[in-house]
Length: 255
Image 1 (tube, helix red, strand yellow):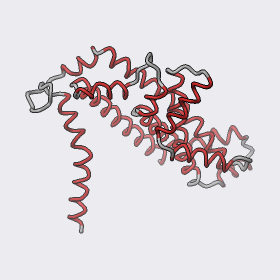
Image 2 (image 1 turned 45 degrees about the horizontal axis):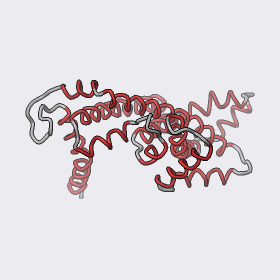
Image 3 (image 1 turned 30 degrees about the vertical axis):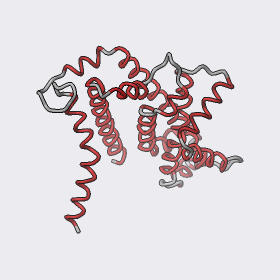
Image 4 (image 1 turned 60 degrees about the horizontal axis):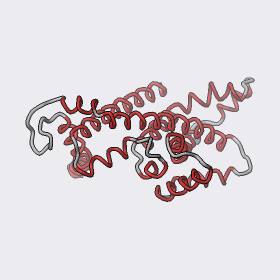
């Protein structure tokens, strides 16, 4: 059975990573259309940097992704801690609401948020996009942190309180260090969800605030340009670096 498992895993990994490998190769290919290999070049990265609209959309997306991931991680971490440590009225409703946001289709969530922003008078742009991304990232953070909380010994918190630690001291010295891997994973997950969102962003952003997924979506309708391959390769590299950093920090935390 072992050879079959190896073959199966090889097929799965090839299916997943061959498109990425082709994209990365074409970002260094002299041939503009990527139909054949004509030599190595870095000109498409230079063209990417000179494409001001693409760079502006990239900056906007990074700003929204970092901001929404940070806000969602803070709020989701606090929410998961409250759900785990305390028994209060509305606790079950809170959990069901978060799970509902995770389960409903993106198109329904996008329409609901658009209606809400129109009714409340929120102008479509950075702030509407930030609020929308925090909304759909928050349940993922809460579930991830809550799973981590349910895995450690609650006697640690009781021991800290018996030794005279206040709520803030217990949170700072006991809860947060134990939650560090989950918080880091939640931030990375939220960052990724925000960065590649198309459906919700297309509904709640305005014409004056363009974001990368929508920009790329409009560009690839007429064919994949080499600048898109170059930018995608850059983001693949950033993703690999973030994963390695996350793995290193998690490993250090376990030690």
